Length: 245
Image (cartoon, rainbow, N blue to C red; front, side, top):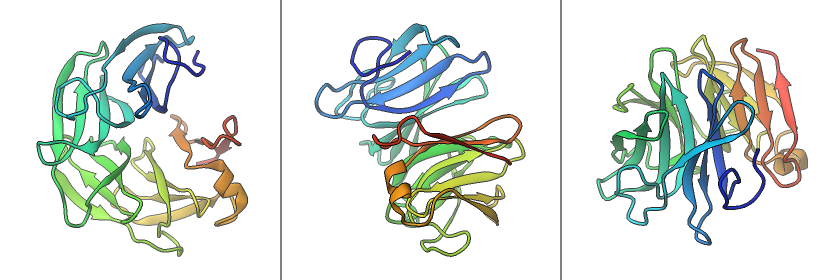
């Protein structure tokens, strides 16, 4: 499965993947301004190509199309795709699809003075609330209801316990705890669903060459609570670390 390219089953600007309850795999791409590939692809558990949907929309307005997609998440039988670019509706856009690519609903997240942009990495918790990473400047995490109504924002720029310097990935476990990968600091921070700091997992020395070469990463948590962290820098593409809960 995969390989670089624009043909079906290949990837151009892969941004994220997610897996449904039948272990089918969904990917989201944004190739940038060279080929304008913005699409979801669906694969079998064995990696065989099944279907694709979506294309580029330079106005960021058309339902079912994408402008600058950055995240794809399977949740309760549906697929959510987050578009980083602001739309003319006045905010950041998240679209919901069924598993066959039929558009169902969009959510426009309006500007917030405490949380002015989105990175984007997002993850739902056990209550259906969503945790979304902010941009590189504010180093904050916003919490939204299942319908993406703003609830709260938390997080602080810094290098102390529970603070962030370069947050890039967020995931929740089956108990509702929130894990945040801080790329340049080379660590995974663990919090409660309310943002109370629990502990850190130090992956690399802070601000080290290893942390830099690993890149901003991709993170997943299995049903047993084990944490998987994969590098996405060209030098560490095939490196995956596994950590105990």
